Length: 412
Image 1: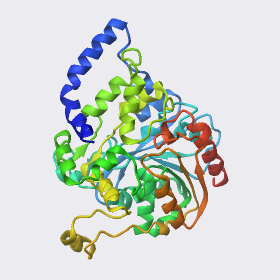
Image 2 (image 1 turned 30 degrees about the horizontal axis):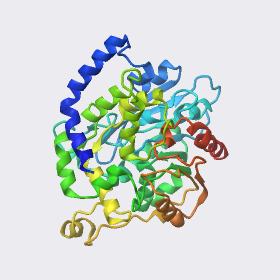
Image 3 (image 1 turned 135 degrees about the horizontal axis):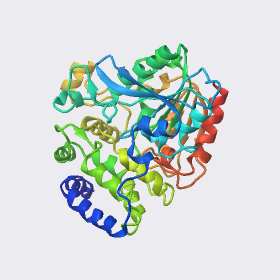
């Protein structure tokens, strides 16, 4: 599996050489260098060009992290439904992920078109959430010393409280994906009062316990400190990794946006996804790929990846393990405390794919056994449905979002 690390290390220095060759190929074939508008613009530019009303807010957490949150309305709606909906992205993503499938298909568009008041926060560490009251993410390593715990106890509560305060509502409906699906369980484990602020919870392939994860990248991270040391040369400050503009992101953006240049470009894109998830040939369109890789991966901390590796290694769902001595200082016990997922009591509808290599079905069933208020567990009706299909799969509107919209209507 060391070939993955090697690829991460070499992509950045060879990017310019490869890019030059591809640009020559583009020139020869008279292909445009500029990608479509839905690819090259940010959240507000994309949605406003399509006629949506989008507002940007800055959210400051209790520990000083600052991120952008977007609010989106369809101006054709004569009345916006009062109960807000919050869509939270997954690991290495941003709010842009809910637009990637395009108008009439992306969950951000579908909910806005149904006249909901839709909010899109950004978790610390991505390109919309690289700011702090006192720390500079470009020079202060301390900015990047976070993992899921800080996201769960600072980011998620700040997002929820801001939206409820802004709208004057007592509850919102919450949709999450992957890592953020697990984060809300962590939030309620430490702050159970947030159960009362969410009326319906819809986690898509929530990542909690990763004992049986088959993800090549995640299992590589579980090999411990040596692999993390190996990754440091492709970080910024030794802390920020897989950020927008990195060699990985830039090269994949280029390769996946030029379908007529390389033989089998979809294989290139699918190959990268295959490091994270299982293969599902043809599930993600070339157009969606070009959008996805403009902003994915969107950045996170090396500590977050280290924690995910620990979850696989320890085979449980727990806080960061610093070793017995530091654990005793921080937690008053030698072992890292487990998250109590049974404290999440919100009515829940959860979705999962049969071919998800990040979140294995055995880990999903472990989670379900402890959840006290499951309305429905939906296994997507496609034998090859994987993790990333939840937000990027061409059939997501039919196989996943239609049922989400039904439940949102019941709880609006």
